[in-house]
Length: 288
Image (cartoon, rainbow, N blue to C red; front, side, top):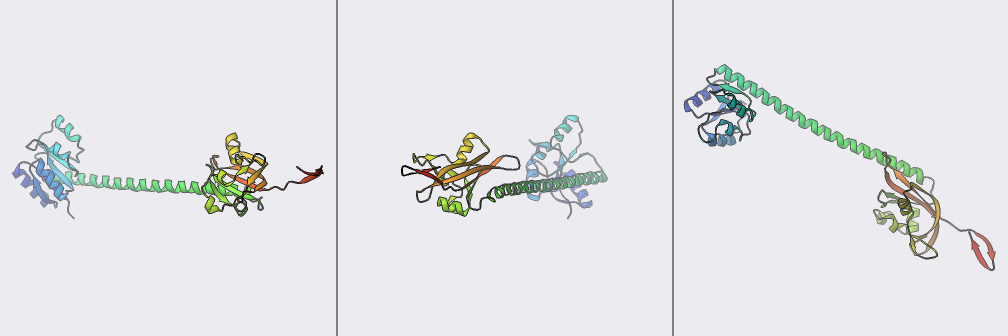
């Protein structure tokens, strides 16, 4: 497909001669424009590969002003080379200049150099887009890899903690204290299954109660958060069961950390604690 050229020249004889010479060189010249309005209309109609623009167009808008409103690359034609005009023309980032009168070989060489530059810049933009796409995909892949590595690291911690408590209840939370896991023992003791409990605050699932006052107490995780400790040693307390029963338990809480050592959640391990009868005094059973 031949290169499509738009000629913008207000002197009719020069414009026709330029069109003839371009066609002889193998270019396609479907339109000639003589002023600002015709140039913009023609550019919109034929979408030229390049525009040969006379700087000194007659009318309100000259060639430089006209070129500034076009998307197509421009080569300026001018009989003048004063610095002030060239400085104005540079602001529109043209692809070349041709000083009138010019030979056919000069015209062809200037067009070929401009077209090569246009092709190069197009390839450069495409390469930049491809490179940006690759970097974006790499960033996403890297983030996914980090997330996966973090998940594996957290899973390893959870397995290490829960692996020693097959007979106890286990509840895992995220960094906000919302439940992410219950094992079957925890489901049985709390009356919540994983589907029901998932995403709910731990304090709603694991309810501690003071046996004497019957008042609710802070959960083990709340104790740790408020005291800013990293792990809680095993302690005794009472759990409010699903049927309203009070269950004596021993429990411990361990905070889990991600690869950047940031708290990523907690694991509560608990099991029913049977108090032992030590002796009988005045007919009253004493417990320890």
